[in-house]
Length: 266
Image (cartoon, rainbow, N blue to C red; front, side):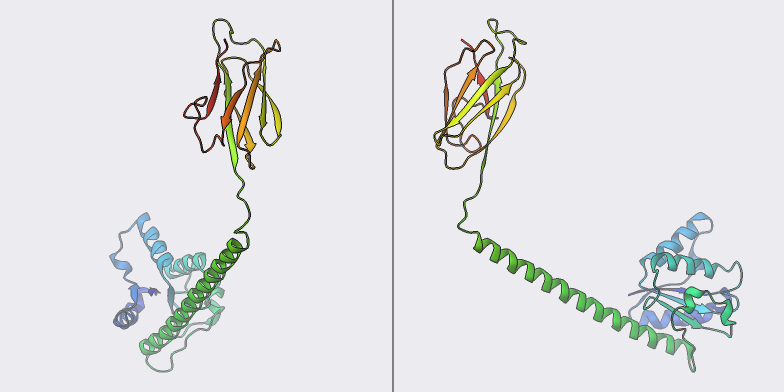
């Protein structure tokens, strides 16, 4: 656990004793503001230290809640991190102070009023808060583990339930008519007729010769082969090209390595 102690400089000795006691309990404590450099970096370091902390301890005294006290700026940083201070902010009366002068943010939680040794009572309260945080972490970890196991069981059941269903597959063709001297570009649109041994047939408009390619997505189903017939703008057909299997998984002599079907006019 990491703790930040906020205090007025007049109560540095009390803050020092609390810090020493917490460190002996294994708590990482930030409280020595005198070691920070002056200037803009000072505020940044304080804000970052509070942001990294798990607990904010505020020593209440007339000096720490007086107007323009830097300790009140630290309370503002704590409020930025924890909108709800419960379990995260521990205000402690270090000296008799008018309660009306204490920020409402600090008064929204129980303020520790030591009846005996202040340091000992602060350490005891921090131990209780640490135990609560530990229990919450264990409960959260257990909840996450249970959720993960439940999700895994659902996935297993889903896979078993659908185990016998066929897996849909999509085949891809990229068709392009190659421009030549006898077939220059911009000669009009071509039509591609794609049929399968299962009887399915589709027609697609292709771009002009030399432009493209155009990708065609096809449901594979249980088809064993495809036939592609290209018809030029004048209604003349190129010889049909037969493609064995799904172009996604099997390379054919009519396809290049990217599954582009290049039609070479005669």
